[in-house]
Image (cartoon, rainbow over all chains, first blue to last red):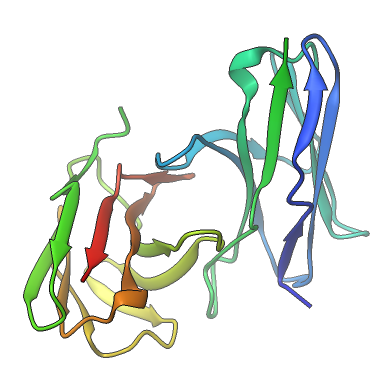
Length: 111
Length: 109
């Protein structure tokens, strides 16, 4: 089983739609969680950290479920510019494999 | 702009060449990483440096040799690479979150 798993997609949604991605992680010692956005042939850019209480930034909402070991990202009112790959990143502050990356979920927002 | 720069941005090298990738930042950091992203594969963590000391090497072949001479610079020395080493090499630094540099796109011929 992969340490961090994401549905690769693609998720094809119309503009204005709400779309949600999940990311599951296998190591319960994981401490910090992040969502990144990656455009084609570019570096990943931090979208948001994921806090235990859940957090929201504009149209984006991230949640963490430690009991079930997954994080989620909800995008409301999708824009064409949201089309990208969304990476889940899991961090441990001690021990090996300090950072583990999901393979990414591809989102394509269509007009 | 994340404040992390990488040079060169693109590199083509033969299998017998020796080259170095450079990562530079002046933001202060707790850790710096080298990561690799091959076509159609997830990002992989290669090396971790904490305060100039290597604390993690994820079974990376010895043809990749990292160096962290000071808190602002991280190098990845390359020698006798293979075509399958062609990838995007991303440096990242850790503050509260991780910030990636723009990467070096490496092609080994």
